[in-house]
Length: 430
Image (cartoon, rainbow, N blue to C red; front, top):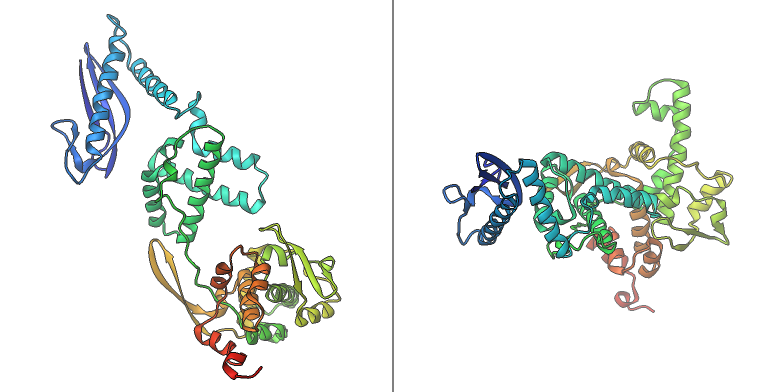
């Protein structure tokens, strides 16, 4: 009997290994579950090169020695009968599986070892919030894309630091932002933690210290009080819309004015409360009581109390206490950019963001970067510049640490100094 180990594809940077078994005129090809960096493979010796740069080499060679003995034992158990290739493959697979089970790695059924299958079931049966489930589904979609790209199916055992490095590199090559990659990695760790706690496996490669969720503070804009006032006082007329490229159609212009007014008021509610879109878009008159707004936030499931801003009171009066009807966040954001342009919020802006592993500059007019989240940052920042206590702002934002709130507030060093100009410490006045 002769057994030779051969790389599956020497053109790849890293490739799996197969055993070619020659026995009594029969040839068997068996996937052995080992991989090697191709540049460290010695084709003459059918083993890894023993070099300092590849410390995994000796371990892989030892595993291949053990596998060679296992395959020989499997074939020899058939005695004078010559087994088929499928029999040898099945026996080897079962042998390895039995070893894993005895080591506490896998329980009885391999089909329960696919992370995507588990993640789908976990997401479906979970009673988590809709937004959380959407985040789970995004991670599942990326795992499926990765599997298709590399023609594999990921088991729990595969989710280790080597997977992390390869998956992370693939995400960067696909030009995803650092925060997007971090969010996907976070949910993969959620799937692994949950399956680990459910005792579906005992693999802890995902707990490696470098298997981490990356995150960066997003460089975004905020609107100061003067810019918010421009939006508040904006008078939507047919002349204004025609001047800014709207089609000269009476019905279209009338509908556009109604829609823009609705989204302007919705946005201002967000600016004067610093709530998320998921919260400020569902406020109704029941949330107003004794000059306070009280609402259970969706994301944090926490009740917050916010004094009613005087401009918000005026909005309620001119709307006869009828608040805007619900709309999707996407549609809302589309309207906000138009509103910002019509209000003349068109100063040049330079933002930076990490995408595809590279820090890049993004330039444009300020209105181009207005989103539903702008009102939350604007509200928090303007409250801070007005001298409102950071602890109160922290409570509204739902942050567990004040450091999160301080990062959230978009204040330059000059703005912060001006905020403190009239502080008694500097003026000497009580």
